[in-house]
Structure formats: C-alpha cells, structure tokens
Image 1 (tube, rainbow over the protein chains, first blue to last red):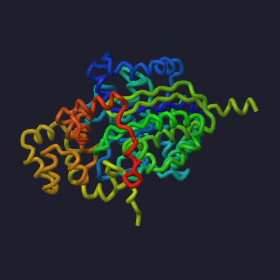
Image 2: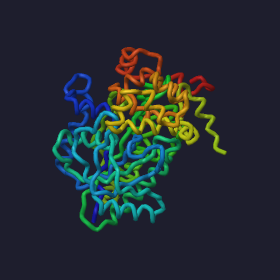
Image 3: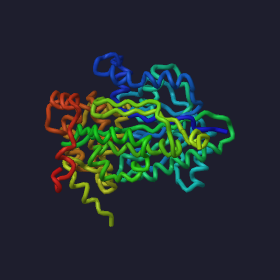
Image 4: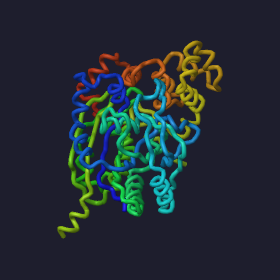
Length: 287
Length: 129
C-alpha cells in the first residue's frame, strides 16, 4: 500500500530560481536562503520518496484568464517547464506518475472534491523552485511528481478549511493505492508577501512565526483564518498559505516537526520551510 | 450579492475579483501572449502596433506603454499576468514592485533587507491600524 511518509512546506519565490539558474547562489544575499535547505537535502536523500504530491499555484502560466480551476490535478506522463516571459528555467522536465494521479483524481472526485483533470500542462516556478531548493542542480529530478494546482490568483481562492479537508482526502486516496509507494506531500507558496500596489513589500514576521508554530502545535486554529485576515496580515499574495493546509491535512492529526527555517527577505517575500512527519501511529502505540 | 467592500478598506491593495478579471481580460490575455519568444520580439519591435491587435481599452494600452503597473491594476490587470511584461523587459519582480510604491528601487530594496514593510497602520483604513 502507498503511504504518506512526510510533508514539507516551502516558499516558491521566482527570484530563488533565477539566483540558482544564473549562478548567483553563492552571493551573500542568497547564501542564508539556501543554507536553510541543507538539512532537508541530507534528510530526503536518506529516505527518498517515490512520488511527491506537489501542491502549488499556477501563476497565470498554464491557466490564462480563460479558465480558472480551483483545484486541478496533473495526470500527464510529464510536464514541460514553462516559459514565463524570460525563457524556460534550465531544469529537467518534470516526470509525472499518471497511474497514481488518475487514481487520486477518481478517488478525490468520488470523495466530493471536484478536481479539474489536466492531461497536458506546463509547470512554472511555483512547482520547479521547490524541487530546486530540495534537490539542487540535477540532470533529472529524483522523484516523480503529481502536481496539484490551486487557484490563488483570482479571488476567491478555496478556504483554508476546504484545503485542509482536501489534504485529508488525499491521504485517504493515497492509502487506498495498492502499490507500495513512498509518497510525500508538499505545500508551497507564502509566507507573508505583497507584490502589488503601494503596500507592496509587506512582511509580517509575527504572523509568519505563529503560523509556522501552529502548523505542528495547533493546526485547528489555522483552518479558520479568513481570506480577509490573510489579506490584511500576510499581504495580498500571502494568501498562498492556504496551500500549506492541504499538506497539513494530509499528515493526520499529530505530527512531529523535524526541521524549521524562516528567513526575510528573498526578493519581496518571507521564506518559510517546514519538514513534518505523521505521528498518529506513534500516538496510538503509546496509548 | 457578494459584498467585497471590506477589501476596499485595505490600504494600497487591489483584490483581483471576478469583476476585475472581466474588466482586465484583454489586458491579461495580451500579457499571456508574451510567454512566446516570437511575440515578445514583435511586441518589442513596435509596442503600440502589437497592443492595437488586442481589444484593450485605450487606458489599458497607455498604462502598458508607460509601464505604470498601478494603472494597469486599476484597469483589471493582475500582477501575475503583468509579470510577463516586466519579465520581457528583463526587469526583476522586486524592481517592478518598487515602482508601485513611490519608493526608489534602492529605498525599496533597503526596506526589504530591513525586514520588509510593517503591517502596522496598513491593515485597515477604517480602523487605522
């Protein structure tokens, strides 16, 4: 049976990809950002997942203003790296896991989450920057990826509560997949940032730090954060944090936090990164 | 009817609602076209002529020509679409963001290095907090 072995969250700032692609990762500005992922690189190499269910948002790349799916799942064999206006990032094509993705799509829809099925799509920095942060420069990605794209561009994005419940449904679906697969769920985006208007540059470190703390200690409290509160406290683009709750919902009630990293700034954004593992089984054994 | 008036209470922020997406549709779709190298080249060679191929308002076209991102957003543009314009220009997200704040690029970069813009005083116009 497939199982979810761990969850990871990370920001997906495009400038991080640009720094890597243009050989600027050793510059003093960027060194502290990449150092925050050194632990993760070693950890994941010791227990490499077969598949990452990677929750991200498309930044007006695969989905124009013509069609805006709230939740979309990529069921293709592979996903090309998008040209976002400056040429495609020089990173490997993303290899999918069509069989697991089709199973997830069917399971989730029958579980009342009306996913949009995508059989061809290019993936942008929202998906490739997290892969680069965790796997560095490589000729091919060491994992297969099932992309789950969440609309956070056009208001309203799904609520945090809905995202958390989708994560729970992803867990049920993964655990019903017959093949013995090691699956991780990644939630990307955030933390506080605003990229538009005279309020651009907003960063709310107290909000971010309490959000990081609550991801393991009190996820219940995060589920009810309203869109208005995200907009006010974490900036207009900080609302991406709802995607972290999909990952959190997929890990079950109790988790153990293995790694936490927070850094300001990367370009316009506060970078947050967590590695969590499910702890419900341990709890049951102890009780 | 949905009530989005609470969003107007957030200073310096435009929430990209379905209504704004409708108004900005031709502008945002023009931006999408810049994801192809040949379209970027055509746009660069004669920006006005390229814009005239799109059913955009005159105000939207003028805002693009002036690279006035606040004016584009006020006419239905969304920053993730507009990013295709400044990416085509070879301009970073930080430089584009700075241009919307009235700060110089250097002032904005210094603010970010110092921890970013505090939310104090810019959460709500009405409540002044």
